[in-house]
Image (tube, rainbow, N blue to C red; front, side, top):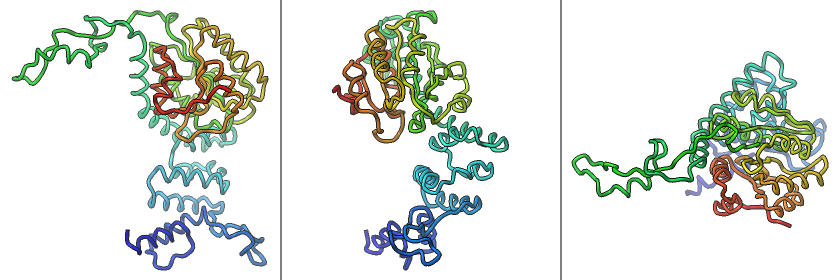
Length: 394
């Protein structure tokens, strides 16, 4: 890297000094300064400036001004960076009120955090903006479904009812990794192909709906869990579309909301979520406990940071009772692309001591995690083998 390029990068990183920068670099610096640059404590402000610590930049509350700024950052940075800067702008400059304007909402970079913000503001979004909000949410949902559906479907279908091998499998159940080596002697050079005389695959047992595994996703909808709410709702919708498992989605704060019947429409599910409020995990588990018909074929995926606002002792006792009855209980402290979340470590350790795996999970890991659960693998061992840090028993 040349000295000139090194100097340019430091000026862009530190802000303020624009001498020697190109016009484009000056615009980039000004776009970042509007959000991040502040005067040092105790300096600046003047007689009418209100003292130190005031923001040198600032976007104000003007929708046209903010829209222009968003256009600038989209010009300078790739989409993932734009999403981070946009999120920072809403948090640091309190711009959420502008999201109530449909014209402004259309200019935003649609991502999981924007969807979470719209869900949390649902009760105050005016009717003229609601149609635009649904379009934005639907766009993100469709992108996530495209990213996650195939892997989730393949992982779960591959895990269910495939324990018995057969030499007469249906086409969709052929195990090609075993069939091809078993038929190499039948390779046809002139056709550059193998004639598979012997097929090796899996035998699917025919199941009625009452024979299927049940997956209960129990979802904490407190404000801190917002990205997890979006991802968990998408996964629940994908799983509900599969005929090989029965999926229930239960959201909770201090009340319980069973959104299972809405899973055919993920956008409707998301707009049915009540982000914010208190947390009563025990109440939600009590509800789900009453829905479990066959404990040995049931999986409870509890997505929460475990900050219990209800009866913590009863919550722990209920999880222990579920585990002892044969229910496969898994606690996800977060289901998001972000780092390890804040959580109640004492509750997490107590649940881990019961033999329930407790960890944070990324969306990319979730399909394989569910496949491991449905295959009756030790999910704790699976997590460790995949480099996922588990909460340890106290």
